[in-house]
Length: 287
Image (cartoon, helix red, strand yellow):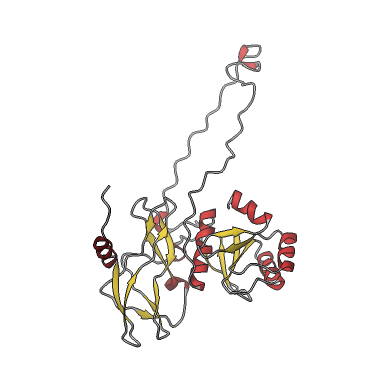
């Protein structure tokens, strides 16, 4: 296999990057959109719009913070963070993208829970089929006969193996939230979004059946943080999980063990590491 030269790599990188000019300070940057792993293993990159100008981020909404990008390999459409660039002058720029749709949350068909573009026609119900009982006294009525087996096979209960988790390197607080969201999706949780109730510290994420708190600060999570997460999850009748960048205080870990809260520590590679047995169980079973 031929290897790429340094010039080839630089030309490829330039082709995947777009020039961005900050509207506030007029400083020019070269920006490349980050790639995210699809469940099929293919990297998915939001396509950047070279003709549109970047817009300063003045306030945040769900529809603007996330975009739905289809995978070129399997066609699956997932939600990923909208590409952004922080200028040294202090302005956060939202980089325009092309050919993507609004987040799936805005496209859900009422009453179905399915995205509008992914909704399929229901399959016709098959006609009920019953076996006529054999005449009494025949071999078919005895165990081991042709109609009644000696035992009924149990359904397959082994969960489908998940692909290898593809982490995102953590450099900023936003990267930590992205890593936690990707991990929840990898575990099998869907409809991941920002939580309706903002936690006392960190960022709240909500998924179908799960409430997550992500703490990207450099202080260990406290007892109060763990208890507040549990109370919020109880009020919404859902499970909960905690992701911390700096670990947990001893009393916080003890209370999480008692309340059944999985605890994970985010390392700088973006891979959550289980801290307690509840996190081990969640990692093993998934959603």
